[in-house]
Image (cartoon, rainbow, N blue to C red; front, side, top):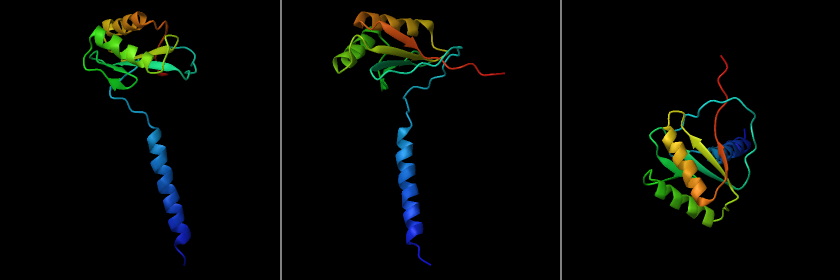
Length: 129
């Protein structure tokens, strides 16, 4: 009995699992999204994302900021805009459901000061009971 075809299949499965596990997007902040009813929207190519966790820490495009100061957030957004984004880019704010309202308002204020006006807030569909 030849084992060559079996070994080939095992190696193909190994390569498949190695490649498919790299598509998982992991962020540094643990987020529990608030619920809202509505329609799903397509995400555009040119997008900037601010993530706010429950204690008010920020990450801009999955890069955790050193503190949650407004000036730090403004500088991080300016760097992203200068690096390839534009002031016409869409900003998506992904905030934890238990995050302080002030943290979300601070993110919106920083976006306004940088010139980002197309802002969306991420939510999840309500659980059906």
